[in-house]
Image (cartoon, one colour):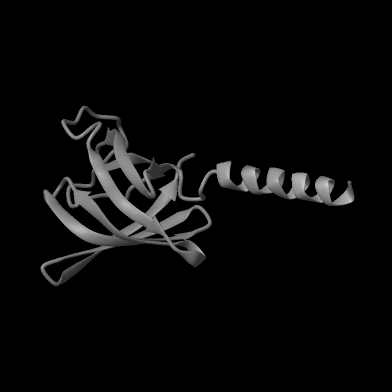
Length: 131
């Protein structure tokens, strides 16, 4: 009987952990681009990895603006690794219209983004958690 109770408790805790959200899930404010514009990217699971879609766009004064990029995928195929590392994915930079092989490092409510294309790497800046 005691073993059944322990087993049930362990399975319940395991199921709870499996359904708990990953720390990278949420809405992130990007670093301002070359024009001073920035956006909000919503990151969610997509299969075994994480993806992010641009949900809002802002001008250099912080005013929300219309953009053809709203709803477009900015992040895809980011795989979670230990210690806040997300790697093996891609990030699309709308201001440059380039897709980078990227990684992200999560520390608290900050997400450091980095990407490379054709051997040229670029610091995507540190994004801040909005929610």
